[in-house]
Amino acid sequence: MTSPERIGPYRIERLLGTGSFATVWLGHDPVLDSRVAIKVLAENWHHDLRVRERFLDEARLLRRLDDERLIRVHAAGELADGRPYSVMAWADGGSLHDRLAAGPMPPTAALALLAEIAAGVAVLHRHGVVHRDLTPGNVLFRSGPDGERVLIADLGLAKALAAASGLTARAGTPGYMAPEQDDPLAVVDTRADVYGLGRLGLRLLGPVADAVAADGDADVDAATGTRRGVPAGAVAVLRRATAHRPADRYPDAAAFRAALRHAVTAPAGPPAVPPAGPVGAPPRRVRARVRPVARRRLGVLALGVLALAGAASTAGDGATGGRDTTSWTSGPVTVRLPPGWRAAGTGWAGRYGDDGRLEPALVVSPDPHRWAADPTVPGAFVGLSAGLAARTTPAGFVAERPHAACAATPVRRTRQAGVDWVVARFTCEQGRPEIVEAAGLAPGRAGLIYVQVTPPAGSRADFVDTLLAGVRVR
Image (tube, rainbow, N blue to C red; front, top):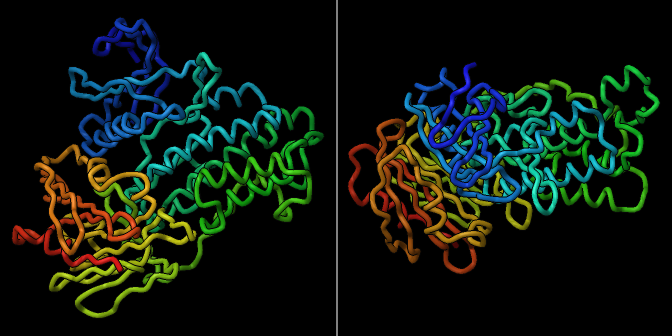
């Protein structure tokens, strides 16, 4: 590969790495007299608009989050041939992959590092994003005046929880990818990242192949498969994190980190989970028998890649669905159905209330089963979240959904059924021809109501307002 002399205003010094979708170069910023990492879309994906948009989404997401535990993006641009690039902070300390190749870490240092990695992933989860590809190569280190910082990188596969549903392409790295990521109809949420954290922990704390070959099993605990000196409680945490069923894992990275820190600091005692074979063994490939109807139900409420909020799930979790032909109820949310429309769903996948249950959500459409996958089918997602209301405002939430490839009309406000809605409308040349994002605060302390609408072709101008007027929270 020929090294370019310059990319934009940056002088290129050397190649840092290549991947399936991009090449990363080390550049020099002449204005700030500092080194930067420049990520350029690979030539073979130049004309694929989906990949191009995913590349730009990563830069936008990192720029919006702008957190010290994530790789920061400084700028973006476009080469003469039209390929986009993003300018990022240079992780001068290399990657976890490099450090593991140099030899095993002491268990105490490995556990502290794993907790720092989990803290970075927790930043994503707090913003409703799932990474889906946590590997040693995506954990980087950057030096600074207060010491070395652990950074989470390569969010090219990251999606908002709705877009991370089973209706998106299979993504992830074997050995670190959660089992459900291999099922095209499974809902993928924050628990997939918990699985990835668990597998990283096993890689950090398990035996190194070369060392075992040279020294035998002297430093390996036969009961757990990890190196000696790893607290039994930490082994139990890793076992739970890498459970085959998502429901058996920790709900998110913050919960995983809290459990890990407690296991490391708690007095020694029996493991929380009895040993059931080496914890470092790769997961068995289990394919459950699922009836066709049940498999369809897993995927019908996963929102398409245009939605940034979570997808609806058909898991009950205590919610009840209305069965009449005029309205549908999910928990405290009731939606009046447009003529000829139906509804499905009882929960917002990936969003949990204080009681540990999914927050209420549903999809309404003439065909809820096809709405997420077929851009020609009109429909709407309706969800209620107390957590979102504590984090942001309706205007702020709508602003987080820019749909950059679409043309936006000015944001407007409307009051319907006692709720003050912030509404943004987008017209798009590809995919869904029209997308409407709306959010408002439910009366009392119920939470933030989010509605994403794809109106029917040729519908009346007041279609969206009529739909919003039919959303009630008791």
